Figure (tube, one colour):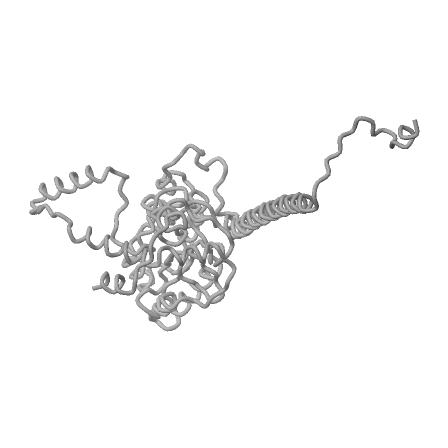
Amino acid sequence: MGDEMDQPRGTAGAIYLILPPTSYLTIHLIIHLIIHLIIHLIAHLMIHLITHLMIHLIVYLVQSQFLGVEIAAEWAIPEDLFPSVDEDFVHDFPNKSGFFTERELLLTEETAPEVVERIASGEWTSLEIVTAICKRAAVAQQLLNCVTEIYFEQEILRARELDEYLKRAGKTIGPLHGLPISLKDQLNLIKGAATSIRYISYTNKPKKSSTLVELLVQAGAVPYINSNVPATLMMGESVRNVLDRTHLTSTLIHEAVSDLRMTESDINSLPIPTLDKKLAMEIAKAKSLDAGHLVVDDIPHGPVEAMEIITEMWSADAGLEFQRDTDATGEPPHPQLEAWLGRTANAERASLSDAWQNGQ
């Protein structure tokens, strides 16, 4: 009876497990590790989420700077003229939309030699040429998202100054006097510009104007926009994390930005419909034969070898530069680039001897 009275209330029939001190320590460590892993996982996810949000914020801010805010209201495409979202061929928009005057079409569809000759003779002015080209580039941007930096106001002012100089001095300042030129997003058009080759880590880092641009300006050219490029410049299509995607292929852009033969490196190129390459070659061959030309079949061994050499040169560092510049902000490389020279590709760096032999 006395023993029953001394038993703690509620413990009748209970089984007690008495563990040695080392077991308590083990359990404590396991709990501690689990808590540590959970905290680490949460921290990792938070860092990843914050980085992801920051990238999107940067992209938004950059996009808001370029996608239309600097385009004059009178150059905004009216809603009733804007192509439908299903339309994927807009290179004929300037000629068929009615948004351009006959004078604007004439000014923007001449070749570069004709433009500088007519400006030098006084038949045309640099101001009307540059203004018409800027309008056409503004339209192309709205249709294609193919422009990264816009300098319309500065270059229209420069065009007016060039016209005043020609009138006052009776001569041009150089062989490219008054000629509007677009340059890819690798060349800084003015001091303080921040071209980025479409790396997020390169944005908003002002630089001095590029040497090539300074030489063009000295010759009288009027650089008015930077055009889109693929991130790293290593892909054929202009797609990147900054400013999203240019909506058509570079061939169509070349035509759609107003057939800007005067602003492209190949000023004598002609706009042609998109064709199958083999069919295009057959048509060219037939036309040449009909015109009395001798056509000789050529097996392009040289270009194949050249491509192999340049590919080895491009991949000599196994993508170290790409990884460095994307890791700076955590932006993901384009899948095509990642598969070629990204971390998952596990590409091997070329030795100094290999690089030297490749260059011989």
